[in-house]
Length: 434
Ligand SMILES: *Cc1c(COP(=O)(O)O)cnc(C)c1O
Image 1 (cartoon, rainbow, N blue to C red):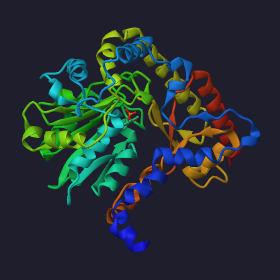
Image 2 (cartoon, helix red, strand yellow):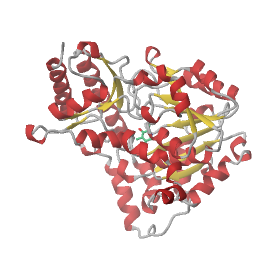
Image 3 (tube, rainbow, N blue to C red):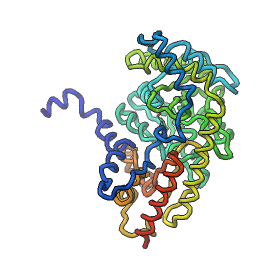
Image 4 (cartoon, rainbow, N blue to C red):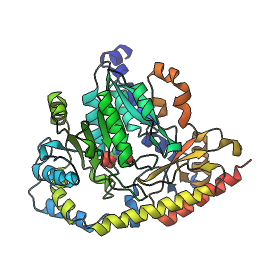
């Protein structure tokens, strides 16, 4: 058996094993298993950004109609082209072209199975022996999982809570070397709920240009900004530096189960073309599966028929939820929220362990909270175990543990349930206070 395992290369894919326990889904399973069925409390999910079950987050009928029409036309029962069908790519290019100083063409748009497949594509095509990539900490653990799976060395730069979770650009410059291929940013931010300003994005672009690296912009939460900083897509800076943008309809339209996303190349100077990145994307998509054809076919109608009042209703519900979340957490002495969320569906909350009795760390907090109050919150440590190659992890130990004793909280649930959930968190913290 052992020699078989070696022959089939199981040793090389350590990412898989690690990913199953340290990704968001891995932790959710662990916490759900810790719920005490006997106390008959409704489980309140503050760990997972999928509000599609809640009435306040129901998608627009315009999108549902678009799907029904596409399906009933019987024109889309076929396989799609591997890069996505042209009408959808064209409609998305128009949608993403707004306010750009250059123009995207349909050829710059690749349809993917959610933003998730976009991440798989970019990490896979950029992986080669010796290369490294810069990832945000805290970040989205799927990046760590795909880097581990592809043996792509990851180096983490910090997001700075005291600066409203801006990128530590000095760290980016220090971490990057001639083998660095790209830096990843997530804006609006998961899990910090921050929105980068135009000026900060400009600095990111300038830094990446200076270092000669690509910017990978995860915009899964595009346009979901409800604070004082307006959302600006990274691709606005496409004339400064080549950009790969990932997005999807999952969050803005609240339909994560429809699995429709895009990978967009901002390459007005043809750098991605010349360096073979575009060919690699096409090559990768040639050998992978595609979003369902009728969902692709619905895209033009979804984009055209969704009314502004649907978007503004979702935004105002998220703003209400963010307010509830921030204000309720302020009332709990053992928790602090360094910055009120301005975007996405998440916020990072610091755990002040010195004020709590019999709680060892963030994981312990979350396990006990699940057991006693049936509230699911993710520990900040999620993903951290995957973060570094061993050597780097040792060099970097002080920084790698920085996220320990933080919590990742989603506020995108029905407002009344959010109130109830945070009241239970407060009761829990009072009960465990020193
Ligand atoms: C939800 C999310 C994704 C995945 O989005 P899908 O379109 O549902 O695959 C990717 N990145 C971030 C930061 C997310 O929060």
